[in-house]
Image (cartoon, rainbow, N blue to C red; front, side, top):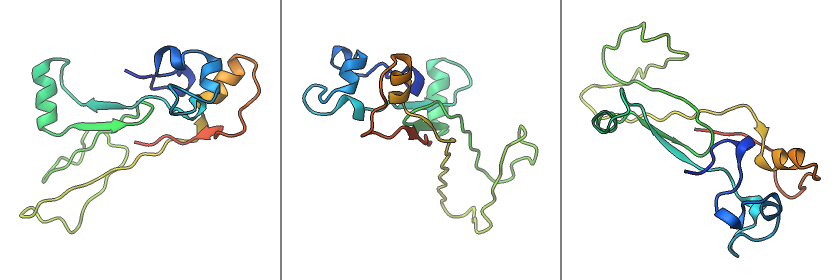
Amino acid sequence: MGDAAEDKFIGGHGPEDGSVERRRDDGVIGWIDGKDLSIGSIACVWATDNTRAAIWDAMKRRETFATSGPRIKIRMFGGVGLAANLSDPVASWTDDAFDPAEGAFYYARVLEIPTPRWTIYDAVRNNLPLLEDVPAIIQERA
């Protein structure tokens, strides 16, 4: 699994980008500049237990999400007649046009506050100049 935190990124291609120098130079395996790489992606399943059966049950319930970076935790519930006090939700939304006789699909987008990119952490930790040709700040999303 690739690194999923900007402040812990140490490359994702073994010795090709496993050092600060290689991550800052112009070629990883001859196809991409090391400084243009980003941290790993993860896919997640909200399961009741860490067992094969519970994970498959959660996937069947479609309690899944993916992120291309940090472990942003979002949990969505959809249904008819859900209790109003569902574990103190942070936000809620109601589809006033919902018709239980028809299919429906909903999508959520979560944005984090802007944070330093891994290249900033590398530069600060190793007393190196900041790279000018890559973004210093990123905004993660899920």
